[in-house]
Length: 117
Image (cartoon, rainbow, N blue to C red):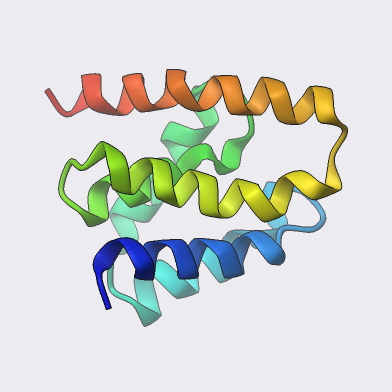
């Protein structure tokens, strides 16, 4: 199975669990990407959370950084991580909020790329 499919499946499952705000899903996200899949170290996970806190929009846009890091700088993997998570997540929110969050994804990709240049 390709890395992109694994990223889509992992973040899609996590997106289904994202009830109660972004902090409610953090333990499961950490378990998946650090303990189970070994995509990030504990330090990288904490750094991704910090990046999600300083960027505009939902804190769980940190999944873009995780996707970007998994494929060592691949913007496509970052986008797949965010879209897989957000596709299921967005069904629970008003359309206007979903539109704003979707627009902010582009800003976050730019920030991630700028940090790694």
